[in-house]
Amino acid sequence: MGAADPKTTSIYKFGGASVCDAPSIQNVASIVERYAHGHVVLVVSAMGKSTNRLEQVVRFWFDGQRPEAAEQAGMLRDYHHDIIANLAENSASKRKLMAGVEPYFSQLFGFLSEPTPPVASYNRRYDQLVGLGELISSRILSDYLQLRGIDNQWLDAREWVVTNNTYRDARVDWEATRAAIGTLNSGEDKCRVVQGFIGRDVVSGDSTTLGREGSDYTAAIFAHCLDAGELTIWKDVPGVMDADPRRFPFARLISELPYDEAVEMTYYGASVIHPKTIKPLQNKGIKLRVRSFLRPELPGTLIHEGAESGQRSPYIIVKSPQALITVRTRDFSFVAEEHLRLIYSELYRLGIKVHLMQQTALSFRFCVDDDPYKVGPLLEALSPMLETEWEGGLDLWTLRHQSDRTEKGLLSGRKILVEQRATQLVQLVLK
Image (cartoon, rainbow, N blue to C red):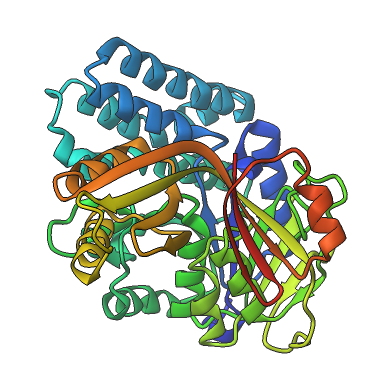
């Protein structure tokens, strides 16, 4: 094969559901054989719910529950070993697949043998441990593709995606990342396998993560830096839906979207695409297609500049669990600029995103992800100066382009704690 034309580069992103067991990985290999030609980069998430289990390991570890942490780590190892056993056709192929992942399990159990670290280091330690899920899954997929006769090169994303040290939500150093990834355009056409979600702090060399579900963002980073022709995200749904089909059985496929509408959907929490994914693609006019790995012959949803800008599909987005935090001054004076400066500085320091906010003269309320390892430190930082209260386990609903009749039917029986309305947009915190 000749040298790769950057414009023929394709990026395929496979999420955890697409590689959750041996038949799923075999299905991914079939998709690669059928559709992935020329210069292709496969971006892979952790298998199944591995990230959730790794998060449990970290929490048990920090809570001093060593046996529970070790049990979760052992279950994770057994899960991947079972997948390997079902993929391997003989003892030789099993040994090859096992050899690729054992260093990461050694690293995981090595962490658990260390003394319990201080809570202040939680986010950093989280990134060193939780990112192992992607390293393990990508290694298994790469080695399996090789055994199946699909030649590929495995890459460690930490050598290519350069970030700062905002652990659990690292910010990409675009100049350094473009310089690194851009070198992959040279040489012959080939298939490469890389992890989503993880990067490397440019100063310390520590592993970092780009935020939950950040593998989509990784795929967009590679697409942007390689001037890809198209990015395809393979999901377990037919494409972008106007509501979550698991919650709303009437959900329908949106066949085409302009970039700006897709940006809004992801901003408000549409989980089918990571919020940071669209902009790097839009900046270079790279098309994004969302397709089903269960029905790869279907066209899915196409997001691109040429989509009808006037097309505004109604949609419903639900984010949960959410926490509603209310802060007030202790002397019943107005919530003023100095109080807001404190609140915003702590939100920034802890890497907390606000999904909705509402201010009155005497209070400031905002809705964030219900993460005890972030909400707890935030309340602790604010409480010396401000009176704080919070309620967790809530839902944040965003309704766009919905009729009044539809809205009333959807909200029947729900208690509304916060309501905000703008043109064709309603946001509600619901109990």
